[in-house]
Image 1: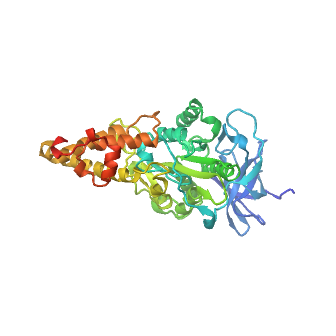
Image 2: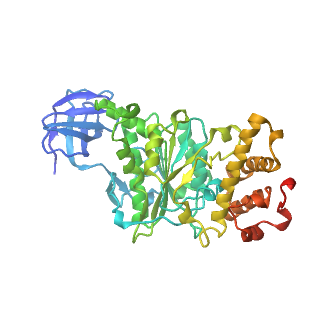
Amino acid sequence: MSQKEYTDISSIAGPLMVVEGVEGAKYEELVEVNVPGEVKPRFGKVLDIAKDRAVVQMFASTTGMTADGTRARFRGETLKLGVSEDMLGRVFNGAGEVADGGPELVPEQRRDIAGEPINPYSREFPNDFIQTGVGSIDVMNTLVRGQKLPIFSGAGLPHARLAAQIARQATVKDGGEFAIVFATLGVSFEEAEYFRREFEEAGALERSVLFINTAADPVVERVSTPRMALTTAEYLAFEKGKHVLVILTDLTNYCEALREVSSARKEVPGRRGYPGYLYTDLSTIYERAGRVKGKDGTITQIPILTMPDDDKTHPVPDLTGYITEGQFVISRELYQRGIFPPVDVQGSLSRLWAAGVGEGKTREDHKNLKDQLFASYATGKEARELAVVLGEASLDESDRAHLKFADAFEAEFVGQGEYENRTVEESLDIGWKLLSMLPVTSLKRVKPAEIEKWMPKSEQVTETAGA
């Protein structure tokens, strides 16, 4: 059925176009815009409706558009993405169009990119351990299948390298690999190419779907790109039964795009100029992760966001922390000392870690060892601060032992190299080896039976002076 065309365009400002005299328009409805002299139409969606006036948000730039002669056709449907299992191994642009030079995709379904909210009753609690091969994550801040756990980073920090490492190495308990859905949002061309090259060289591209939106692409396209990626993930997980890992970078650029559109709509700004509905909007992205009863597949989300000036109170990381189940924090201090991956284990948190550890999932000593490593590392960092003020000579033998432990923990446990893929057992063994630097009397978070089993008698330090 053909839809009625409207030619009464009252204004075009930034990414927005106002159409007058509209009848029966719906929120989020797809709009086809025909510009004089152009063969292919441009597209947008209905952003706001007031009486017979519709505000249309354009997906492409409005450069070259004038109100005279422009025609708007309301399609009577929302923006949909054609999905198929053949998307694996392919690269798309931020608008969902093929961008790898290959043949056009023949979709099996067309799905609304807004997705369908998961009924809370149908959600299943995430409790399956994911082995990322990164010791500081697997042992200290365990990731479980169906979780949403962002990476908080800063400008110039290697979050892209860490994300690529997790994507290459992540496996589920039975040894199976994840299908990867990866979306870049407003990143540089070099960073986008880095991800594409990493996936190709690691042989992971054939099980991945890439959506590439760079800083040169339209701002409004950035708003729809993460929803394109998550629509693909939902299809692969809940229709095809795959375990899907979704990585989105950089969510701060996405929020900047929201702020720009909000400003063009002349909305009353919220904190730091971001729209007041930023929390709600972010939740429509993060809450699309999870497990569903009766479905074999799962969606695990690792969004990446950069904190301006490394400020955790910035609206984007602040609001994100209220929605997600913790966060990984990238440490600038560790990075400047040459440690990779520079994960700040004290600043990081996985609220679901306890559901993914223990006998049958990782190892029976995991919980107590993790607690002991945290406690000993915290003591070592306190000793380091004390040594800066008073000098190392003022420390007692126990403090010196903990200071050496903290240095070794950062260098040998947290630091492991970009292409080192450790099993969780190897990471746990390294933890016990490092604890052998400390007097047994200071190991109060682990049981004596665990010390006897996992720490060789020859390595145990029984007296403080021997440390």
